[in-house]
Length: 214
Image 1: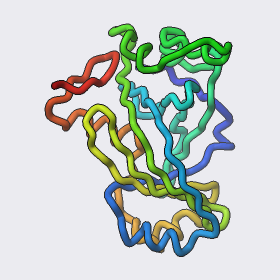
Image 2: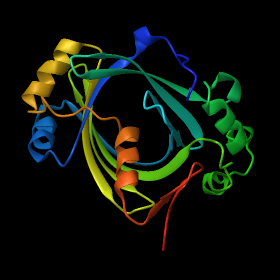
Image 3: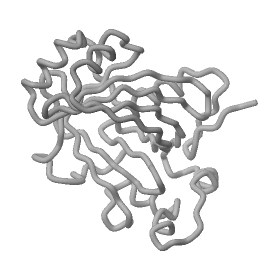
């Protein structure tokens, strides 16, 4: 079980609310309400551990760790930090960081994450899931939102998610109600991936990585 260790100042953490499914009406309304919109495609490798209060992923060979620190009115508050050296990484991800050699890209050395994940120690206590995200980001006043299609590399499944986040609980609750999302389950990406992988037939899950079977 991961050692509890705050990764950053919890007073600087943002509240998030994430729902799943295509949510067509909410997506359409969100696009109308937005004052800014941008799109992007990103590739992430999620590192799943037993404790869902930790949300860790690797993007562009950089480890990003979020920790759940509070829940209010259905919103989850997460700290967020990027780590480029093992010294700053909370347990148990410090060991994983070292095993994957994630400091090597920072030194300009040749690096292939897929190869390193495949060679990860089976006793590491982590499952790796590679995904590609097609994401549209929105700005609604002081709040941020996103609508994302997530393709799981190992299964080919596509998950659809929408999230809102910000510092002001009352503003978030108002936007949630306006989008018709009140009462929906708030489920973080890593938890949704964990559930999807567990429920996907033909997928072998090891402590080191998640790989699809022929």
